[in-house]
Image 1: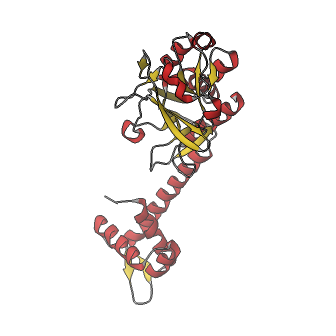
Image 2: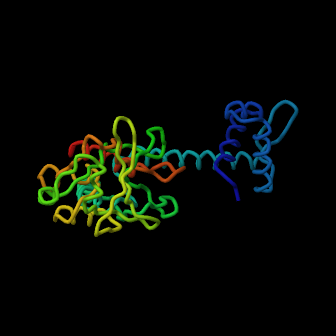
Length: 297
């Protein structure tokens, strides 16, 4: 069995250029690599494809037939590749993971709009606030909030946000509004839990100095949507991304405090499995998300 298309390309180059050295130069390969590829190809086929003379290489009868088939195969592959790249219609499935609150409130409606534009695309959405290994779990895309470096090649910034300490106006009216993060120790703070630990240290900045405040309360949960629900109902204080609670802030369901101490850079990213080039349909979906989030503000 022929190992790769590279062997076909090398053989066709030898036939076109009439020598191993010329073929090597044309392909930017070493002469040794070209020679070894030809030998392996002839070994697999069990016949000589090239008649070697002191002046020039020429194709044997078997080599002529194989050259014709190899050129046809390479041409068909180029045509198939071009058809996929140039086609305006996208097909296939996209496996996506996102956090629960963002996925339900924001991502799901955006998916509706994308499928309306691309009806031959299907999207498999898995919602979880746990950190997921994209490659191991077979996802094409993760949509996550994080403070990641802009130089990473496996991510794209979708929109920027900030974490807000917030509660319902009724809670603040009853318990008082803190003026410094240290005062959160006297409040009922609703905490997100992870499989390894609770996220009960909230981070702030003051005068260029970063510091953490340990918080506690009478409720904790492993996904952010329930935290948001409790906070709107007046149960306590939450630390939530502005991306998740934009509508709650605009309508007054939640009221932020301590904004002078907030740390910027809690951004939303599209993250690809490392070492894997995203498909055209995945890239188109990410572009649609970026545009939709920009319009949403």
